[in-house]
Image (cartoon, rainbow, N blue to C red; front, side, top):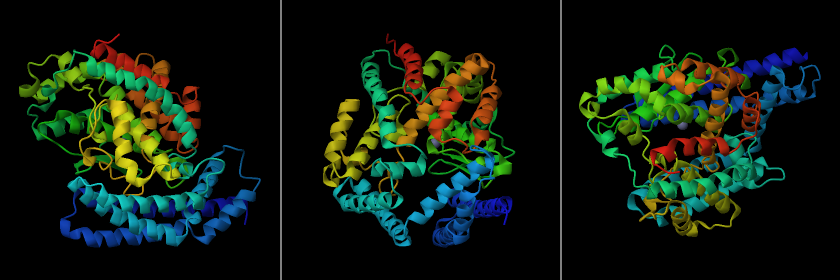
Length: 505
Ligand code: ZN
């Protein structure tokens, strides 16, 4: 077979596998949005069947043969060509999928299912001891996974991180986080001491749900999410699921007495959705039609949610519409008071409720503990004490029970170690991309004041979305911004936004 024949057989197989995986995505979305409770068991069977078929296809020995022959081929185009990128990423996925013994995959699946049940109970009872031995088992399995995958000269954590943020290492993440933490801790403390507090009760007045939905749809459409190629529905845990070209599903949840939850949640998921809708549909199933990493995905959602959606210029455009939509809650509230209320910063125990400034510290704490747990330096029995001690150092407050502390997140029970850093990386990437876009496009603030969001969306599409996985995250940052990843743009953004709001100098 010629190289081109091998290559096109590989692409046909990749596309088929992705098509199958996207069927699971439809069922997964339906499970969260529409499925009646009694459908759960049958749905689990459907999803398990598809997962097995997808795994079988992606690890088939024929894919291995095609890749070995393509690895040897010298007529596949130059380094960095489309074909080479697609083969490189296919090789990466194949290696990851085939390096794990079937026994380990099944054991991780079984153990994390049970660990999650134990975690739910432990969190409810505020009793870490119910979860401790499960955490120990999950850690052992994840260590085994890291060994099976390998991590070169690095550390076991790298092998796990690489699943979510290809190419990233713990050392590189640490180097990016440390200077960020050193500047964040004093900023959080200074904001805490400021006597210039926002009136946060503005956003907990009555906001009728139907008006929230309408206003959220309008904003998501205005920033560039296409409802001809997507939907917004309600789910208990908001998410975005891109099924494939032309169909991307968003979900949110509404609370009549908390405006920011659904509104910024919608902008966040719409940011993910704009990325999915911006991917090259013709390349579906190959690396060139896929998002780079969780961190880069998160950079898109955080950019629209925070950099754009919580900015003063954004509200200069939208606030009159918000006042019309919510006349009772906002009729007499000046724009500046509202803007300050949606930028309320205060240390809190729960990560998912955290504001833009303190959020990153929640992540750094988890990143430190995860590394120490995986290396064995931190024993599961000591996790609550170390959590609380570190939390107090960063935030100046101490959780009263473990459900507000080390039991709050599902991730460890689900085996998602190495996942947390991608959230804070997303914030850093977002700020760095945003500075570059602002430089390239002129004054973004002025555009937002006029309700013009297309230039930023088009810039993101061209520089990030349409690139697929051509570059790994760190290379993409370098390529798009001309600089390696740095904490500086994020700190500049946070200082520029929050120092004036809290009258700090
Ligand atoms: Zn997100």
